[in-house]
Image (cartoon, rainbow, N blue to C red; front, side, top):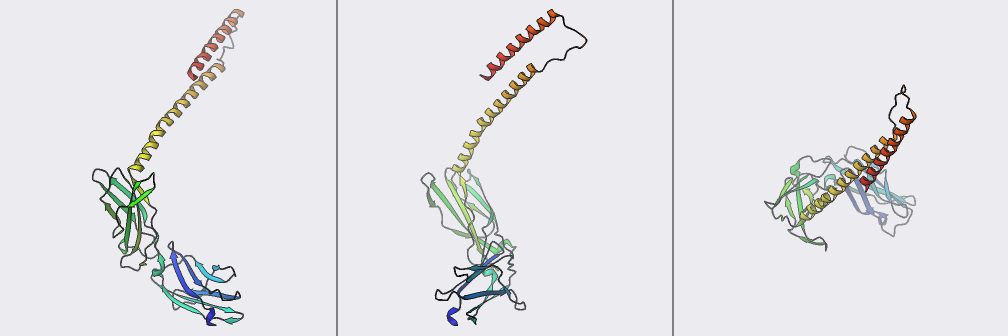
Length: 286
């Protein structure tokens, strides 16, 4: 049953250890046709069936998701077969070198350090993550630096075309302190067992005067806010202490009894003192 065989079998490894394999099924194939994927990484092993199929609207298997895939410079053997109305369909076999189908992650830890006096910026990064390559020299990179001519109008002009370099740093020699830039980087093979396709772009990093100005403005705005908050807190504490000092009575000598005249005199003094302190509090609040 040749008309039921799959087409366009493709596998991609991404995010270091995840792999998706998909295939195309002709629309004329009946809904009762079902496919099964098996794979192994050595000719001496037995085939293992997919555990997480991708299905279409007819519940037919049209792909598979794999986890914890280790490249280890090996080949993988894939087999897709199936059945239709109890009859076997034409099987499909393919052998793939796993490192060739890996989609490299973006370079890691991209940083930019600029010196306005020398009109230079040093861009640094770390290699992308992989499960089988540890040498930094196995990668080369493409760097794209954009000059944002007018951020308010959202106009972007590419200052220089993309360039391929080796190593883990690059000196940008056309830096102007009054302008704003962004940089992004991606990686590919440099003569090792690495995919020759370009990997994913890193998240753009912006640098330049506009970014520094916005940061400085935020800092200048926060200084008076923090100072005002501190003053308000101190005033609140002072008011609270003064009020509590009026309410808390002073200890009396239990062995000394006040005469009626002494008691009246002390009461008047207490009223006068209390009224004076209340006036001080109102003046401070206003």
